[in-house]
Length: 187
Image 1 (cartoon, rainbow, N blue to C red):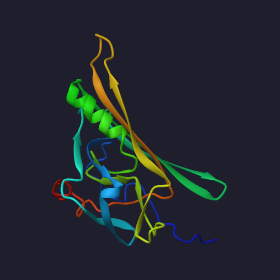
Image 2 (image 1 turned 90 degrees about the vertical axis):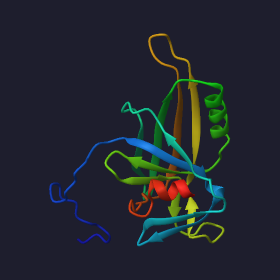
Image 3 (image 1 turned 30 degrees about the vertical axis):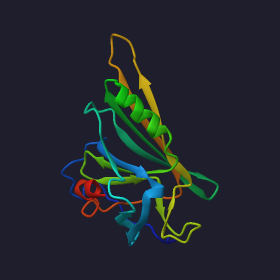
Image 4 (image 1 turned 180 degrees about the vertical axis):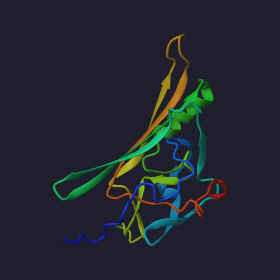
């Protein structure tokens, strides 16, 4: 029996020069600031915002703790994709406490995560007409940032931590040649 839409995945036939896991930087903005997203054959290839400077860059500790995972599951025939990202910034200050408070107030965000294997993943948005007839919509459960400000103990370090969670209806591929850090810096 043929299943429509299946594509072969054969280990050792693709050449990957880097298969390191984890993320090293993320760009995040409020989804309400996004005016358009372009998809080409189901791949996110472009994004437009209403105001320059909408995307904020986050470069976190290089300690192998940052990640972005997408865990798929079915409930009957309904597919969901639990999305979670984690990032840690060592040290605390009044500025970081303010950043944490601002982050918790963002209701729907879009996050581009840059992975150590040189790929780019997106969280918080999907292709398809939303209720406002745009060609994109927020994920089924919108992406939100849950900040934590941790003093920890004298045996460890203080830190600001962000956990971003959402639940999507699909997995959204991103073209790393058109969605680059330089493009997002300009947005």
